[in-house]
Image (cartoon, rainbow, N blue to C red; front, side):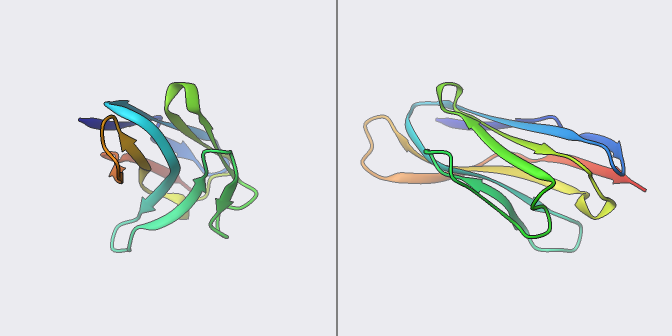
Length: 121
């Protein structure tokens, strides 16, 4: 019914930049909050950045000032611009969306399949 498809991951040198995108598709009535999480090997999944439907954003302390989350509500897409990347940013990045399906009362949270980001030193 709903798919979240991430793109934009890859290998980059320390200090470089990447832009991730996540497009939601399917029988969607509306999308509430959207977010990016990441999970490094041997570590728990952690919130990187979140954004409300109105555009208010919050960030993990470790990425504040380097990463920017944004969204295009017309395209059901959330972006993560990552600058000044560090080796410790290496992880699988997942997008997350809380959304309402057509003809459903409740909102549900969906996850993308993840995209690998590797930062070499």
